[in-house]
Length: 341
Ligand code: NAI
Image 1 (cartoon, rainbow, N blue to C red):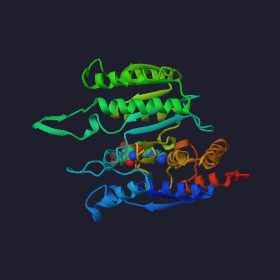
Image 2 (image 1 turned 60 degrees about the horizontal axis):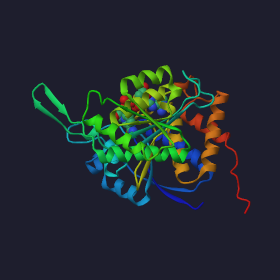
Image 3 (image 1 turned 135 degrees about the horizontal axis):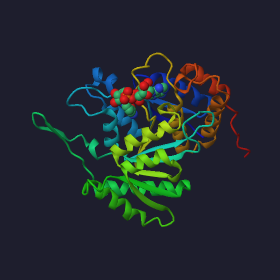
Image 4 (image 1 turned 120 degrees about the horizontal axis):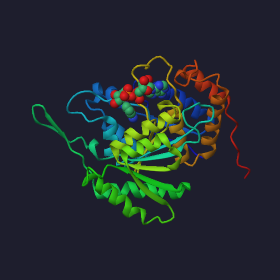
């Protein structure tokens, strides 16, 4: 097993509360992690004058893996969002969001088992915006063949690795013929390298309707940055909301694991946030490290807490606070499976 050095960004808003709960649960698994704590976003501004300090980037470059809480986007001109900056600087081009029903959480749909693979570095999030004249603003949508093929190949490789059957690309190539057209053509070309995996595409508005009408037809959704951002929240709503869906930003060298949701300023500081999304993001991290036994034990403890229903947070209809939920999870954790060798 050994011990791991991992960068930790607790974040702001509800970040520190859900991070504390998550770390306590990881500690209870016995996996030995030295957390290299770093600040970012608003918290980093007074000390470093920028939302993503060099110390933070150095730490992730050293450790290669980070667990991250949400960061409120710094308001003001001249600063890119810390989240967008981290993804660009570290070339975390694949945003992975597995969305699955959790036993015990009542939701609008049953048997949802979808994976969103979102391109994380370009599209309308490239940050190229300007005012052409008073009253006329322009944002540039950047789509490149290299990044589109890279994310498509990542999605198909993931499908292959995880035994998934189908990839559906979402786009608006009927209107944005050049940009979305390039994304779609790139995905189509890459799909030919993976004949055993079914591939199709859907225009994004139709994809949204079909997700609501008949979500079980989909398996992996391959999306550019903006559509991926929107559709992943839509799909999160199908299984219990933002509080329970994990995420990971993955590149060829580094991986940053984080919940889908933001810093939830409306409930920050009250210890009432649901830490499940961050716990499950940590679970993806443990699997990435090969610590599958610890990940399985966390998953089964969390689902037992939900099935029992006594210690769930308000967003899921319960009354427990963040700390009580985490304590309940720890109390349900089984002992580790010991190697017999
Ligand atoms: P949000 O995800 O923070 O909140 C949306 C709604 O969901 C709120 O009502 C909130 O209370 C609820 N919610 C979110 N997480 C929850 C949890 N764990 N438990 C219970 N309820 C939860 O989105 P919003 O308000 O649009 O963004 C707030 C800030 O977060 C913004 O500055 C935004 O830029 C930033 N943000 C950061 C992200 C990141 O760090 N990866 C991702 C999304 C937004």
